[in-house]
Length: 443
Ligand code: FCB
Image (cartoon, rainbow, N blue to C red; front, side, top):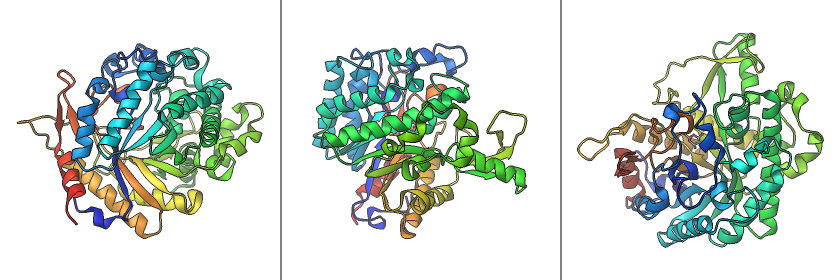
C-alpha cells in the first residue's frame, strides 16, 4: 500500500464490512426463514441454488473473525443484524438467542477496540413479511421502525453508529424491476412502490431511533455512475436516465425532498397514494451518508427495451471476477459530486468498496495483489477527494471474508480473508497483510 494513516485526517476510520446473511449461517440460532432462503430455491435464481444456511459459520466463529479485524489494525467493524434472526416473524416476539448473538458480537468488538458500525437491514427480509408483499406493502415503514427499536433497545447503548438500509437501489430496483435479487420481480409498479417504501422506512426508523436518544445515524447508498457509450444525444440522454434511476434515485429525495425528474417518467404513475406528502419524513436528518462504490457503467440508448431503455456496453478497462471495470477515478468523482450537489458538509463514509477475484490458497497463502492494488488506488482517489474538500471520514473494505455473494452463490470472492467453504478455514490473503501493514505502521 502506498499510504499510511498519516496520509489521512487524524480521526479517519478504517474498517471492514460484512453482512448477516452472507456470513452467519442462517440455519443456526433459531433464525426465521427469509426471502433469500426461498429465492434460492427458484430455478435459475442463484448459482447452484446455494443459500446462506451455513455461509461462513460466523455465528460460531465470530470471535476468530473479530480477532482478524483487530490484528489488521482496523478501527471499526461494519456488520448487519438479520431481521429474521431477531424477529423470526418480522414483528412481535424477538428471538432471544438472536439478540444474545449480536450482544456478544458488539461486546466482542468493544473488547477488541473495534467500533461497532451496525446496519439494520442488509437484505434478508423475514418470509412472514415477504408473504405480505414485503417492500411493496405500505405497512413496511412501521414494521421496519419496530425492528429498529428492538435492535436499539438491546444494542443501542454500545454501538458506534446505526445505518438503516443497505443499498436502497438493490432493495428496490435490482430486486423488483430487474429481478436479480429476492423477491425476483420484474415489475415497474412493484419497483416504484418498493423505492418509496424503502425511503419512508428509513426516515421512520431514523426518527424512532433519534427519539430513543440514538445518534450517529445514516444510510448506505450504492452508486454506479453511468457514462454514455458515445456522445450522441441519444446515448447522453440514456446515461441521464440511467443515473436518474440509480445514482440519483435516493440521494435526491434524501437531500432535496423530491424524486429526480427523469426517474418520475417511469416511476411516477406507480408511486403509492399520497407519496408527495412523505418527503418530510424521508428527509429526517441523518448524521452521515454511506457511499458504496465498485465500478462505473457505460450505457447506450436501447429504444426496444422497456423504460429506462438503456443497454450496458462493455468498457475498455481491466475487469474484476464480476466483470466490473476497475475505475478508481470514479470514486473521486462520486465523493466530490455528492458533497457538491447533495450532501454538502455531511460526513461521508465509504461503507463498501472492494473487488472479487478468483483467489486460491497455495502453500497457505493467497496472492491477491490485484485486490491490494485495487484498494490502494481507491484510497488514493479518496485522498484526492478529501484534498478537494469532500468531507470523507472513513473507509470500509468489502469484505472481511469471502462469503455468500447473493445470486452468484459462493463463486465470487470479495474477502480480504479467504474462506474454504468445505472446511470453513480462514486464510488471510496478501491484501489483508498489506492493509494490516499500512494500518499498523508507526508513523
Ligand atoms: C454490494 C452489497 C454486498 C456485496 C457487494 C459485492 O452491493 O451490499 O452485500 O454483495 O455488493
